[in-house]
Length: 502
Ligand code: AMP
Image 1 (cartoon, rainbow, N blue to C red):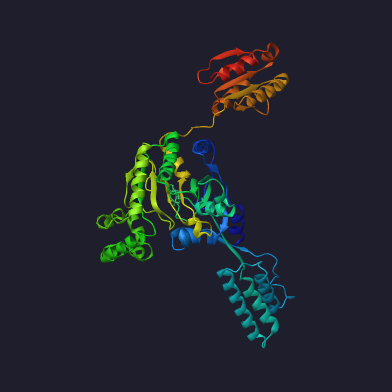
Image 2: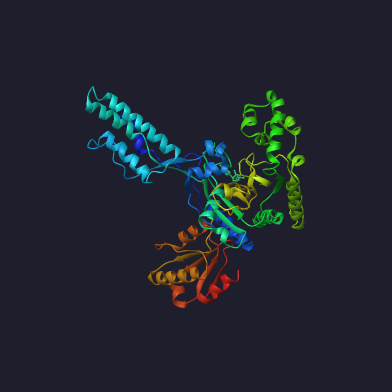
C-alpha cells in the first residue's frame, strides 16, 4: 500500500457494519414506547420476562431450528470460542509431539469438548505431526517451522453462535432451570437483538430486534394457542398498528405431516420442470417451503397442489377446529391460509403470521406456532410449547409509516437564566421539576434571554422558564408558552401546580 493510501485508511471514518444500524433519538422514544407497552400487555396475561445470553452453543440451533434450514446453514454468526491455556504451537521450546500430547490431554480432561469440529481438528493436527515426522531427515529446524505454521491454524474450542432467534434459548433455559417443577404452563417473554447474516434491505437487517413469548409445559389446549394470539393482537391494538392481518394454519403433527409431505413431494416431482431452481431444490430438502414461493409463474402450479387441511389426522383436525372456535370467542379476526408453513423445522399444528401496512415486501411483523416436543428434542422432559416472535424493527417501521412516531424528543421546560442569583435558583428549580417528572433543559452557561429562547424553540420545548434578577427578587417567575408566545407570572408552587394540571 502506498503511503498516501495508508494515511487515507488511517483517516477512514468508521461506520456501522453492513446490515446493522444505530437507533437514535427521537426514534428511540418510539422503541421505548413499544417495549414498555410489551411489558405492560404481556404482564396482564401473566407472562414473566426472561433474558438469555446472546451467545449459545451452535448445536443448540442446529438441533432445534434444523441444520438444513437457511438460518442455520447460511445465516448464523458462528465462531470458535478458542480453548485457552494450550501450549503455544509457535513456541520452539515445545516439541511437536509435546504439543499434540497436550491437546489430547485437554480433550481427555474435558477442557476441550468432544465435538465433531474438535475431533476433526485433532485429526488435522495429527496429520501435521505425521508430515513433520516424515520431514525431519532434511532439516529439523525447517520441519519444526512448517509444523508451527500448520498447527497454529488449527483451532480447538467450542463452536458458538450469536442467537438467530430465541425459542431454542428459552427452551434450553426451561430445561436448565428445571422449570417443569413450576406451576405449568410456564409463560415467558423476551425482547432483544438477534443476528442473521441475510441480504440487508428495507425491513431486513443483520442485527434486528425481536419481542417474543413462549408458553411451555402443561397442555396443548387450543385455548392456549388462541390466548397467545389474542395477546399479540392486543399488543398491536394498544400500539394502534395499522393494516394488521392475521393468517393462521395447521401444519399437522408427526402422524399426519410426513404423509402429507410425501404426497406433496410426489406431486411436485410431476411439475418439477415448471418450477424455479429454489423450488426444485426444496422438493428434496423441504417441500413445504415451496408453498412459501412468491414467484409469479409458480403461483398457478402451487394453487393446484394438495392442501394440508385435507390431510390432517383426526386429532390435528379437531385441535385446529377448536383453535378457530377459541379465536372466535375472543373476537380475534383471522384468515385461514393453507400455504402458511413457517421456515423452521420445529413447528407443528398451529402456525400463524401477522402482516402490517407500510412495509413493502418484508411485511411480516410476527410469526409463531406450536412446537410440542422441542423441549424433549433438546434433552428435556416431555413438554408442549407454543410461541411467537415479533420483528420489532418492522413494527417500528410500520408505526412510523402511519405517522405514529414522535417528531422530536421535546422538553417540557427550558430554563433561561441570567445572573449569579438566578443560577442557584435555576439549579433548584430544575431539580424540583425533574423530581416531579418533567423533562427540563438547564443551560450549563449563562446566555442572553434572546439566545436562550431561540435554543428552547429549536429543542422543541413547550415552555421557557425565565429567571432573571427581578424574578429571583420577587419570587414570581415568568413562564412563557412557546407555541403562542404568551407569558404568565407564577410562584414556584404555582408553577408546579400549573404543569401538573396540563
Ligand atoms: P422468524 O423467526 O423468522 O419467523 O421471524 C419472526 C419475525 O422476526 C419476522 O416476522 C420478522 O418480523 C422478524 N425478522 C426476522 N428476520 C429479520 C431480519 N433479518 N430483519 C428484521 N426483522 C426480521
